[in-house]
Length: 257
Image (cartoon, one colour):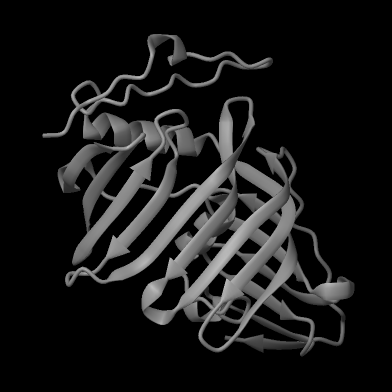
């Protein structure tokens, strides 16, 4: 039988120099219902409204592996600009992504592709086929619990985190939630046969005025042997003016998808 555990009362509220940190969740499924946990995770995640920064990105697939430096501007829920740079300062490409359209500039081919967002398009930047939500999550590190409390199959304490299993399409999604920050620090999606479709982890948290964002994010698609890892060396949480400015050479060929 699962044994519930309580965090010390003195850890319930921790003050920072500028703003109070959110209360630490009691690690007890009897005290905190699954519905309350889901609501808290969503509310804490919504506090991250924008993000900017830079770092390194690594990718692996059966055919190719590599890495690049990136600079990023993100405004939730639907605007992302990623500029990639290879070794020795060589430009690799630029991706501007919204819910309605994408723009992808390939500097090596001097081409611009644009059109409605499509997971297959993102493989031109990364050798991993991700949905638009997964791309946003990969660069923000804030994973959303989808569905409602009625979709919950299992709710328990697993080590020092909550573990929540929900219906997820024909299969299920499993979320591990840190009680201190109420962020999803690990996520797994399986199909009806139990095969793992997506695994993700987030860690090394940055904090600004009681808003948290991971510096390191990793997403794997085991069935295809593809992985992408994002590591921020500089991160600005809730940047009031993230820049979405970029330039494309006038001679670039434009291809409408």
